[in-house]
Amino acid sequence: MSNSSSISHFLLLALADTRQLQLLHFCLLLGISLAALLANGLIISAVACGHHLHTPMFFFLLNLALSDLGSICTTVPKAMHNSLWHTTTISYKGCAAQLFLFAFFISAEVSLLTIMSYDRYVSICKPLHYGTLLGSRACAHMAAAAWASAFLHALLHTANTFSLPLCHGNALGQFFCEIPHILKLLCSKFYLREVGFLAVSACLAFGCFVFIVFSYVQIFRAVLSIPSEQGRHKAFSTCLPHLAVVSLFLSTIMFAHLKPPSMSSPSLDVALSVLYSVMAPALNPLIYSLRNQELKAAVRSLMNGRFQKH
Image (cartoon, rainbow, N blue to C red; front, side, top):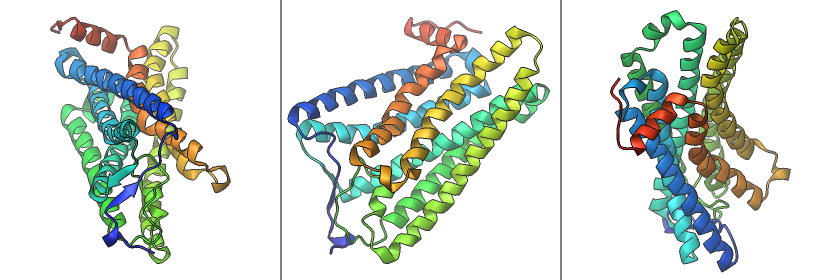
């Protein structure tokens, strides 16, 4: 038996057992994180500097890139450090900080993806009202609400989780600090308190999911009614990247936390967490830039050191 007051550090799950595989994981994480930093950094710079990209869609994409950068910078550096130095420890305060930041950026990502589905819905289903419903002030308010609610959500969960006593040691079955794995260490009589918080969060996340699905049902109905094939193609090209990002992120995070216990295993849990915490932030810029000619042109201009004034 131990309690949180006597715990000075947590033990994270090692990504590999042998030294060679640890170094391989370090190199892979380094490559993925550098690619994510470069890609998201290019999108942020391109949208910020390209005046013709100062539209609601690209404004929210810039915010999404910021949340992706924050997410990958929260989990990957410590995992790389542990792989390189053959250790699995993280300090108690470091774990609390990592849990808070990861919950903050993941919550912001869910909110921003929901707002972006609303942006696509208004753009395609209510184009005449687009300027009114998604003016610059409305966009700023929605983005601010997304970040503020994410901060409050992360703060409440972190404060509640780390105020509860731990009775089951300090070994986490994850390569970074995440709420479900810390829950397993809580004393049983306090377990339901944090589970209640998580249930509320899950309901809010499910509400966002339902809103996204409803938006895309309306979007596809509107797109299929467009008479010209070129018009349908243009509408689909602005929606498919967002739909792909939503599918990759939500499907992996929902399966990771809702799968039956019989399917759970350390290797599967790590693989799924890598998908939503590392691969998704790295792939999002690629997914968005593949079908968006304006964004690709802006990134090329940025890399060539010149921006055309529009």
